[in-house]
Length: 71
Image (cartoon, rainbow, N blue to C red):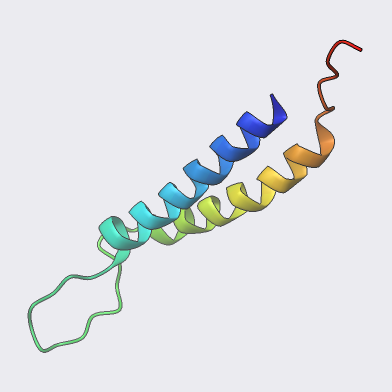
């Protein structure tokens, strides 16, 4: 169970990072004027939440007990 939960947390974390950066934050402008403002105001917070989720996956993996099979 802990393996599935850990992998799920890592996948969701990386997906959240990719979506928040490429879709919500990256200014895809076609003008010559550079813009440093994200398209969605909360995009950097979502990116940081994705990074935190990936790091928390290691904590979950270490803290959840391993399922013991029949001996």
